[in-house]
View (cartoon, rainbow, N blue to C red):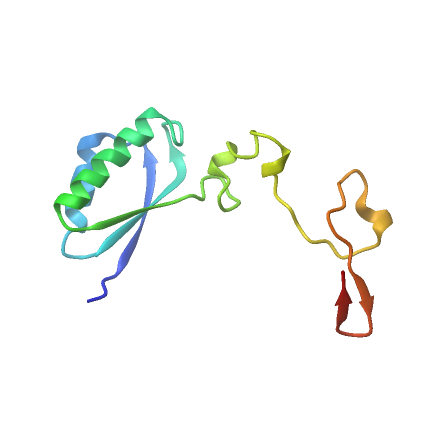
Length: 124
């Protein structure tokens, strides 16, 4: 049987008792919870307190038969881990496609160039 998932926003200080209380409140209403760090989170994202709260949530959810996921969108864009990933080095920086002339690249490294031939034909 498929059950509805709840997009569970985390903010505040993530006290263990409150996390467990909230998980208990989801029982019988949702088959799974998707943890999403949001504005107002007063503990460091992916820090020691955050993981302690996650462990409490995982234990309580498991005990109650509720599936649990982490949704990494802290601070956007997707998968940035709250900016921690981009700080590692430039290999982890976001890449994007930009329509324009080669001369428009500025100081950004050019990874690929496509040539437009006709209305819908683009070639590498």
